[in-house]
Image (tube, rainbow, N blue to C red; front, side, top):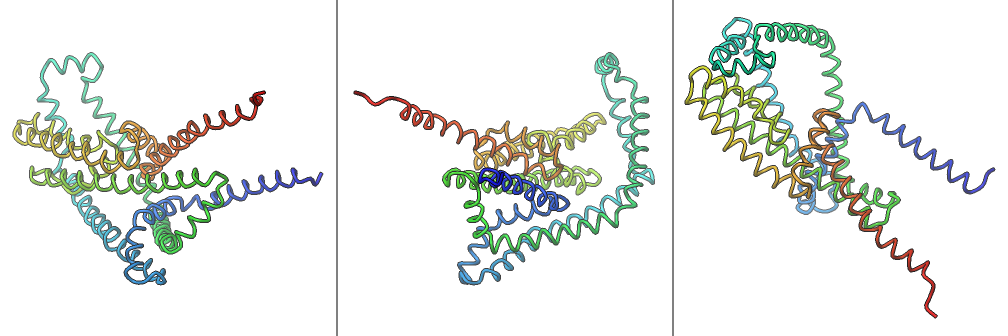
Length: 364
């Protein structure tokens, strides 16, 4: 029974089991590992420049320098935005409780301004009874508040987990920067594929992650900034909050930011603020929209060499399955899918030709 085939089969089974167990252990820190890897890929060119400037033997110093720059230009600005956002949300919540801000009243104003023909169309679809609709929304909000109250009991534990994951990400980022080249060589040697195929797939993987993170973050930052500034100039309450929400939603290509500025523009038009509504629609379509239509294909689609519709579908699907991490995971899976099938279609004809040459009898 102890034949070489049995030994090899048992070894492969053991390899699969140990690999699955290792990834299972890493599952609680999946986000930290993903973002540590993504930041390492994104900032490796900066690490190489520091290494050339400070000496090729100072690997640790260059990695620490890159880590410090990441903290200054990425982590600290995000922390400042989050702290300001928390203050803004608290102020907005207080004003809603005091009645200074009444979104139900705003909704009633929009309904009152709707023309009769539109109301008749809504009645046909059973959407004309806005009182019942608002009652359902209020009931849903009450249930949601109870869920939030229950989850609030776990804030301390969630905060602790976030801090742990944050330091795991930084720790992993340091070693990926310092030892990334040797780790890449080991991966290339370990993958049971032809060296050209392994090189192509790993390059595709790093290119897609770099393009996706860089492109989506730039587009989100630009769209959120433009939307927040427009809201502030038009006198919309909580402009910073809505700007951050627009930046987050802009991770969804084509439709993200419009989910925020569209209803606000409709409110302006319905309540008689025609100038503000027209200005906001112009900014949303020709400024915020053009940012998505111009920058995203240049920064994401061009480098990943994927059509825009594939980027859109893979991003939405990834976020539906993996949450915020999905805007990176989705396009990566789509790009690797296209790359593997491209290699398969390119290699199959050659294999068939080689097989035909082996089976064709020699001429007499």
